[in-house]
Length: 248
Image (cartoon, rainbow, N blue to C red; front, side, top):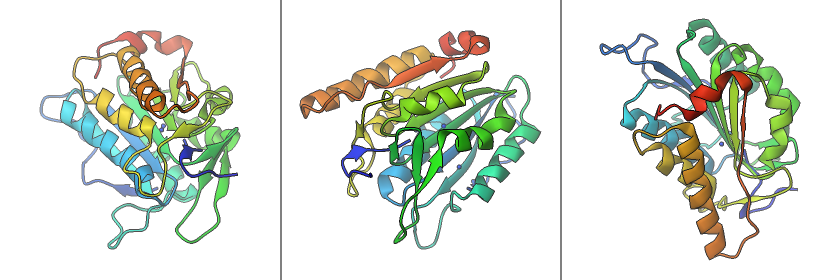
């Protein structure tokens, strides 16, 4: 059952591509293909994924290629709906254009429950996207170095089904814990705000980013005496060096 305040959510996509081409920049920076999926129709869900993309672009380490979908209804609509068709199109486009030296990031924000992410449109009952269903949709990305960031309650429960040797998975909560900050009036989930802040600091490795996010989230939860969400990280065997490299 969904709960307001305790973020049943999930921070690793539909079909509005910001008008940035797939060509590399004049400086030939490595590319970061960013798939952002705001699956819940409230501002915090969209802000979690769009502002993370903004921070990654501002740091300037990568030539960021943003592919963002959101179920938040706006007028005019800025992003496409995060439907199965949109996700498939995003994944297919990245799989066709990415090279071995590129990095893929999939960032998801929504409510969640064990092994399920919530998807909803305004005024409609939420439906579920299972961890196995998500794994099937992301399967074409398996050959590429991929970072999956899931902001959601119980999101650690998705790790088992998403594991591949070339993936790093970072979730907002452990398998049996809620995460917080996803009230309708919130600008970000706690995890989403911490991620945007941590990735904005230049010269950091993913290990550094994960440590910063964990510290930020723990402080916010401690101030409110919430049960700690304990964000989780899993690193595939073939991307251990990526986890420790000062990429961001």
